Length: 291
Image (cartoon, rainbow, N blue to C red; front, side):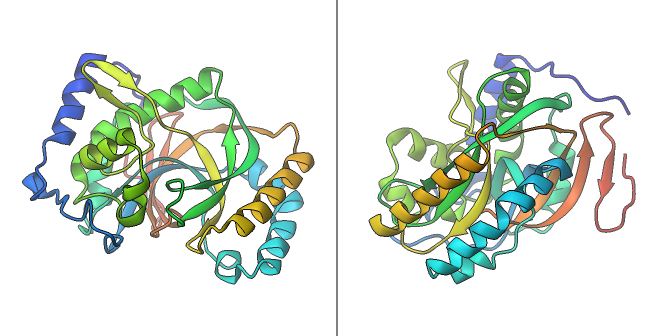
């Protein structure tokens, strides 16, 4: 099967986005926004997503230079849960929440035109970030991606397509962007949560593409309160790692995967793997080629 090329126009994306937004607070088309505005986080059932698994050339470098000192720092700071959190290393395209166990199959069926193989992706720059400034938690230690070049441009365009394709499959907002996080968000972030169920994604509004997606790899997922003292400590960890990898890591993404994730966004299992080279699809659990 040949890789599908990007042919959707902005007008088509706008129509898809309007479809994604066609939900009332009471749950038209199975989308329930009633958790938005409540003080507590929405109960988490299942989160699914589309991600690029980190290739071995990247994980080899991280394992050799970052993993051990990171674990030591987490334990030193009393972040034992964080040190033991399971995660399949990845860069996210988009996440949705849905209790429907058929959601991964629906995502596969709705998969939009794929990007080409993403050559020349540069992972560079460790930093800490909160779900929303002042919300307290969750927070993460991330490794950024250089925001220039054809690979980055293709990643951003694919995020726009994937958001429009998958947002209608959600059953409501991602739990981690509700409660105290939603309360601290700016207006643009709140609108994304209401209309597509998650912030930090690209959408088309009034015929114009609006980009807020920030592709990155996450190394630490935490629900501990992000106190000023903890932030200062973790910012120093990030600064130290930036000295270890000042030039970052250059790689290629040749696959994209449909996965299941935990509340904070760590990947629990890979379900389908899709090749960016030829569009072939594999069921990861069985090894069966589906397309």
